[in-house]
Image 1: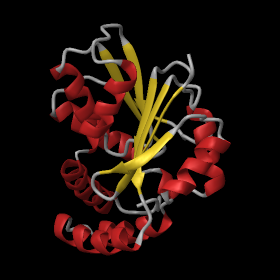
Image 2 (image 1 turned 180 degrees about the vertical axis):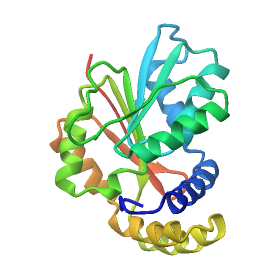
Image 3 (image 1 turned 90 degrees about the horizontal axis):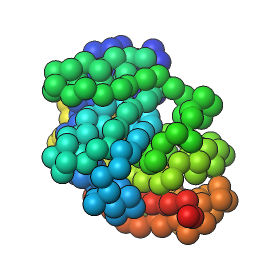
Image 4 (image 1 turned 30 degrees about the vertical axis):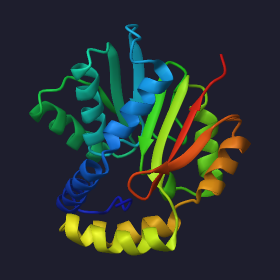
Length: 221
């Protein structure tokens, strides 16, 4: 799905498959839960949250809905390097009646995180080399809080993913990318080591449903 030459119809079908997977994984709910733990659900101060590499914005929109449901004055925006994905995200938000900001940005070069209270992300790290992950985490620590959900590498995760993507999506891209993504993912120890190298002292890396891992960090007060 990283191929810029991928036809728009194939790209959209793959993103729809990811929506089903995210829904089953309750990804937005997991990100929201940990944001609340870090920021505090009782906080009524306006907060700015950025979802990087947001794809078609499905998780971003679900986060915005959760914030609205709980009466939180938090504003979430999404960015992605793909103009096509941002177009899909804006269209999806419009069809769901959500007013929010989506913009094009390269998370590895032109991303500004200092103005955000929190940065979240799902299913992006496994697309990167270790040196790029280190660079990304070093940038993200300028935000007050960071919550990242990604795949975890294991034999069981690989076997389960091969079966799961066939059941949850008709996209040939998802069928190929899913198992390859697990192979490219980090172990919990590897992710924790990279977070420490990036200066995220005290970062927590723990298992998350289903077959994922979660990196949670807050800048010291």
